Amino acid sequence: MNLRPAKGGENPIIGLESNKYLTGIQIINFMGGLTMKKNQKGFTLIELLIVVAIIAILAAIAIPQFASYRQKAYNSAALSDIRNFKTALESYFAENQSYPTM
Image 1 (spheres, rainbow, N blue to C red):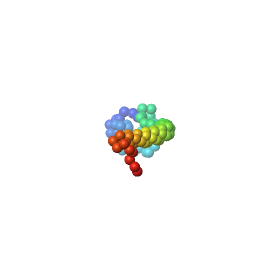
Image 2: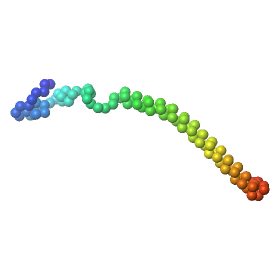
Image 3: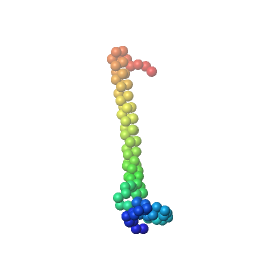
Image 4: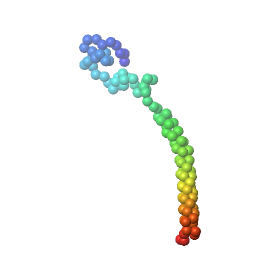
């Protein structure tokens, strides 16, 4: 379809007489067809799949590390509680000259 300057009584956008109708194929051709233009912005399916794969790999690395950090924090908290209990027992012994009975 050739685009030419509009003349009197024609549609200035496409250069056709105003009483002429476009077919579906002509509209697709006029709009640029079904292919992406080089100046259009967007991501292709492959690019999106690559991003999803990278995120999955990072998650596969991070989740086990997170679990080990939780276990280390739990162990540290338990050791801290034992030290506090020992300090409380020694304080009781210093005041009463005996350990408390259970």
